[in-house]
Amino acid sequence: MKVMKFGGTSVGKPERMHQVAQLVTADAEPKIVVLSALSGTTNALVAIGDAIAAGNRTGAKNKIEELEAHYANFIKQLVEQEECVAKATAITREHFEFLDIILRISFSDALYKDILAQGELLSTKLFSVYLQEKGIDHLLLPALEFMSIDVNEEPELPAIKYKLNKLLQQHSDKKLFITQGYICRNARGEVDNLKRGGSDYTASLIAAAINASVCEIWTDIDGMHNNDPRVVNKTVPISQLSFDEAAELAYFGAKILHPTCIWPAQHSNVPVKLLNTMQPQAAGTTIAEDAQSTGVKAVAAKDGIIAIKIKSSRMLLAYGFLRKVFEVFEKYRTPIDMITTSEVAVSLTIDTDAHLPEIIKELEPFGSVEAEDNLTIVSVVGNEIAETPEVLKKLFDAISTIPVRMVSYGGSRHNISLLIGSEYKKEALQLINSGVFGL
Image (cartoon, rainbow, N blue to C red; front, side, top):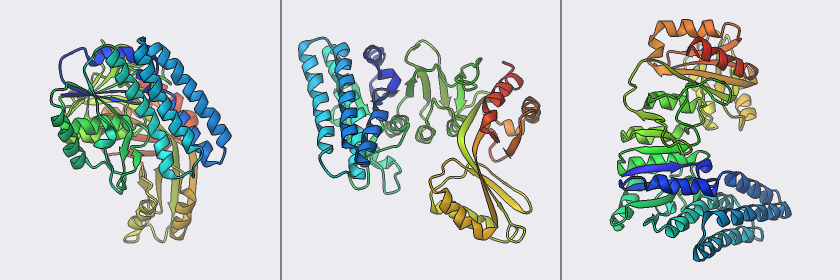
């Protein structure tokens, strides 16, 4: 059995949803299909939730009506038979009535999560109606019956595996299952989610739970490229990456794949394929245990980086100093991306300012603290590149005109990371494309 995940752009238009139906029935292998919300829906639901939270119920009502009109138009082009149009219309009405009810009751964080879940529930139910119209046998498998997270908001893989396989055994006569990405239940049994990009996570968790033959992630790009095609003119797709290489690229900014998608698949050694819904014949990118080759594979850039520098000639060399620094970030659940040290200072980077004032305040007893934003981490990734001397020479020759604030080298065999001002990002990526990749 294989897993196929389709993102918002892949189901965002009726004709795209029709194409997805062709793709999921192209071969006889049993499969679980994971769908995101229609493109734009989650953003609209976030806006609705934010408006209600702010007390702007009139604004929220207008946004709900606008979104419902979009779905009404979508249905007109999705299905043709009168019975199926009526069924699809009833589905959307039910979900928008729920949103209307929320306008009239006390708002809470739990309700906000319920609002965000409507997109995936709608997309999968509408896709199911279309499959019914086409006479394609399938089963709608509610993700809320098996996908769960614990009190630390981490997926409960053993529980997911048990619940999902039990459901599949109950419907062993079925070969095609449709389920929702992104949504889950939390430790309190409430509707929750796996955060942005969570549909990739859902697909990978399902693939690990059922020991799938492959986990296919279908988007609107033909695989992982060696550079950001939105910034650099000439890029090429990568045929194969190791799990470690892909994890580095995803974490450091490659948008095609969510960082969390890698570990469940790697844990169960399930290959991941990145494929293009608009060009299904393209080879795409395969992510597996084997890297196939050494050398530089790709470069990724992560924006929104903040650098924090703690300077203290008195404390830096003291036993336990770094531990105390890290405990501050642990307290506020803020991960550190890069770190460098000298005799009198330690510099590190984070990618969120959610608790920046509190972090700075707690670091100040250790020494003088400086914070700088509007920075970007540029990561060059490839198998064993930290052990390949010519890579460093090529990289630094290519970016000799770019001011570099920090360098991370040796922490990973597969990654060399540079911290630069965000204003230099485009130039740096283009220079690396030319100097390192020869493109």
